[in-house]
Image 1: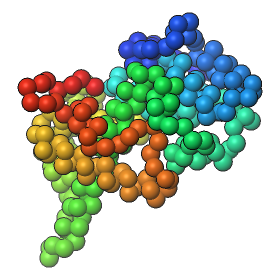
Image 2 (image 1 turned 90 degrees about the vertical axis):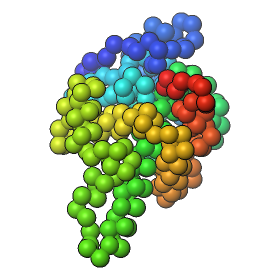
Image 3 (image 1 turned 30 degrees about the horizontal axis):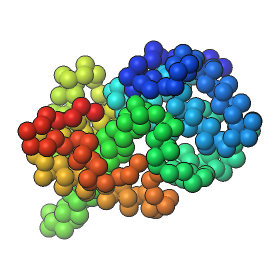
Image 4 (image 1 turned 90 degrees about the horizontal axis):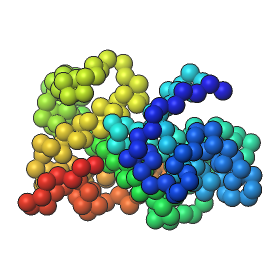
Length: 267
């Protein structure tokens, strides 16, 4: 199978491997993963260990692009899990794999601290960035869109066709076109009308960081609470709870909102 692997990000992807593992190539990680499962380790535990050893922030494999790291900061571990599980289709039950990838349901009980330890500190921190900066931020957008549509439905003038734009105005203080222009100025990337999922998530993560910069602490807390509540409602529809991170307003504030007299923490 053909694969082109991106250069390693030394701080996020390979920040804290155990000695001797820092030079493992992709093929070595896959071979160790397969060996661990065949030797009797549960496939999910072996998967997390393989993710902990993984170094490439992205790759092109069999014509498909995999970007595991957004903006050098936000790590989508489930995308890497999907790629690794493709290597052992005969060793992991298909129903359990589908439940993990599509509903986030873990096949075995594993506490969040062990999950974090298996990923390693750098990857786990980047996983938190993805969770709050992409998943919670997307949920916030959906929550505000629903608010706008409800208000428009109650309006005697009917639905506002610009409701989607109103969400951007309410959350980020500018319409979508102005935000797209600002994104281009900041990143050098011109967003097309039709975006891939990863392009959209990269834009969402950028919006998240802009929101943290422009909003005061009370507004950040209010919007984060709204996003967390929306994400919880969405996830309860398909699974018990989100594993691998303790989602809470307090944890968010500790990580992203500076105390008085402090500068904002780098993610």
